[in-house]
Image 1 (tube, rainbow, N blue to C red):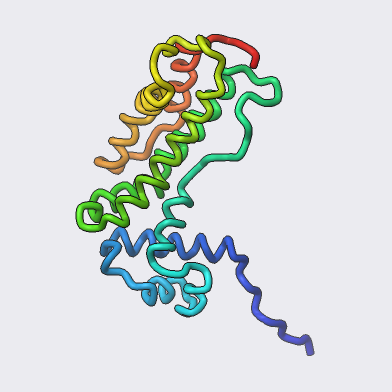
Image 2: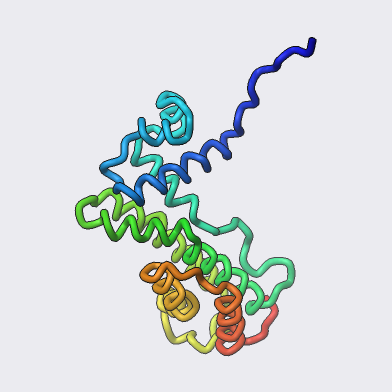
Length: 204
């Protein structure tokens, strides 16, 4: 007779993602304050003790949930012989995928609904979900050669805001207000046209 082995333990990343999915759903339905860690644990089918081994409290879980929507990679800008145009398209595409992701849009709705009465939520969302992503793009633009684009007279922070706004604002607002799925093919086409219009073809 074959021995029955111990149940397969779910890898930590899979457990974290399952918790994120459950917390995202509960927060969206009932609000951040109303949901307890006990309820989140039960919805995932784990003990509260196990949940607290992964996240120290609900605020820690929320910070990790916000961070999970980020699309930033650790790739260095202007490496492997790519042109400024190619690298900037990759970075803007990365930003667009983050901003227009289903999770990020849902978290934006949560921040709007809860932010006025929950400073911690509003601060966490700004620092992790907005400021960190924006800083990533500014950091990339900082590495460009002076005069390499038509917006060189503006600060790199303004350039970053203009690029993100021109590529993501309309589809983001449509997703946020009308729950319309963004057309990523159209977004990528906008990124292509924008970069080709504003940035010179130049090897770094």
